Image (tube, rainbow, N blue to C red):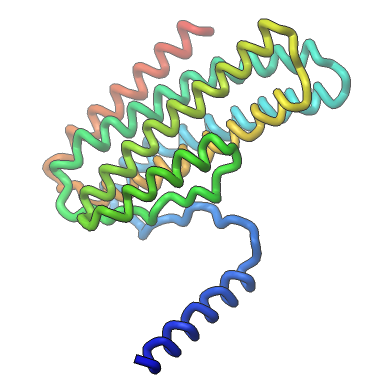
Length: 239
């Protein structure tokens, strides 16, 4: 008994030392193992566009912050307005992707769930509290498939929550002409969390894709293509 306690104490100490050595900066999501040819082609046909669009949204918002710092508030707010339109489209893509993954989960053979989503990687208190609460449920589930399903639900709801807060903050500021530092800070935090949600969604996409049998792949691709076509039509109509 004493030996076990000593062993546990040494293990805890080593874990803390390693955590200190790693630093306090949160780690970004890690990638999964490479996919086979046909499965990698499916991922490459969908994921890069999503990555490019979130990068462009980040650039647009960063330009808005620079315009604000230069004192050109009207120009800055117009750029926020354009960013909000792009954000809406991205939210639709992410939610559509997560719904498609959930639909095809029954066809997956062995789902290797990504590691648990870490609450400390988020920056807004809203998302930190939400993810931490959902992770408590995750600890009670032992089936890999069920854990993966919970992560899909977490990400879908998280995308809706942070997008809703971004819109609420933006519209309220536009309505009341309040452009304080607090408003801009919240917009920045919400974008960071939305970007993280998209990265986690792509990890979930890759995890399910690696588990799909070849017989289900064409149907899966058909639904992804339909999602992309719908977004292209939406973007053209908005323009």
